Image (cartoon, rainbow, N blue to C red; front, side):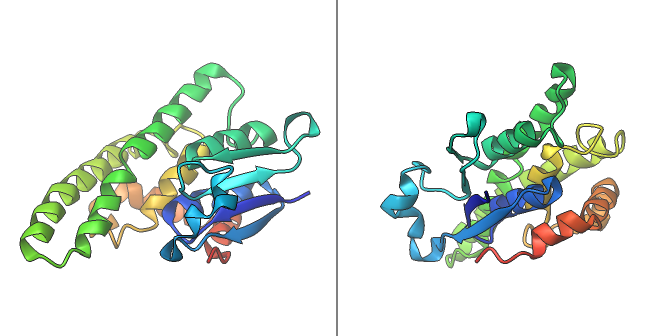
Length: 208
């Protein structure tokens, strides 16, 4: 049975579409048009109480019973545990995956997301302050990623769900006003990830 994938064409949605493709899971896209506030529909709020995409409904959950999961990081962990792919069984190996997944959830997402917001602010003074503040922090985070990727091929050493999480936001680097040429290790990693056929499909599938 296919997983119901409730989403929209955003970085957080693309994290999951790439992971689903890489893990070889069957899924049906259920578009949630956030520009029309469909994330507030009662049907969606039943399993995504924070009114945010993405969320999934897996009819073949643990014990063969349906399960719902909201929050993109939680979805990635669930899918990795379900399939045994891109999620190591060894706790020591899980630690760097969780570290970089949490790094993305806490910073490399919220901060460039603020860049997205302030680019659209009409008041010049407000826009200038916000862009300066959040662009600086976004570039700092790209620098953190670049230093990490100078030491390893992928964020946790081996490719993992952390890479899909981070890729969803790196995909919007141009919108972050970031030239990947300034971060050569991130550029190498980004091009490597995007060259993977399954990941490529995950970024091409229609989500809206």
